[in-house]
Length: 214
Image 1: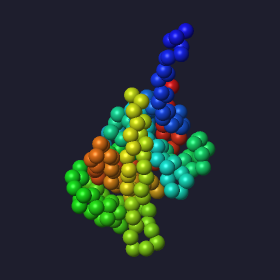
Image 2: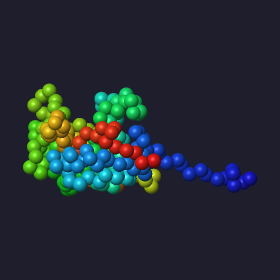
Image 3: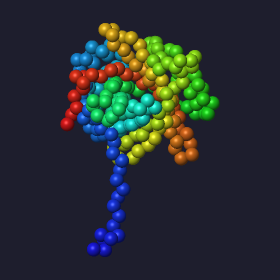
Image 4: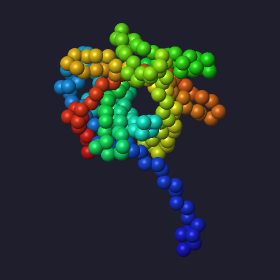
């Protein structure tokens, strides 16, 4: 009886978002035939056909939409963008991204140069391929888009990363495109700012290209 009075319930851990049957700890399969046809044109080589979701990120956009990212064991993430709700009916874009390069930013001066010049440029060249900026402002300068991403880990931990992003694209065959995401990421650890510049390449995913396991 006394144990009931004095026992304390463990605080509930935040729940990672789910959509399309994608969830933290789940997995999915990619269509092998489509990847074999696409990969010769893409920057990435040999994407894993089966991928395990190890973390989930969520970021709100100023436009009212939401970015959901399902980080996998293949050094990448499946990104789902929704607008107006958190159901499949509200999905506006699905892309599979893989990390191309990550560079540590060690000083405040380097960080400011990254925000002012490196992230947003009219074009960006990666692996000899030229990508053109997609998010353009009406003036001469198109600033990076700022979001704050909350990431849910499998052990129940969460973290927040501020990101300053720019999207680029290049044309492939048959009306397809490959995308490039350039992001300055900042995470406060204690009293220190952990910063890096992250380049990721991605391509569109259709419902027929993916099979959810379980």
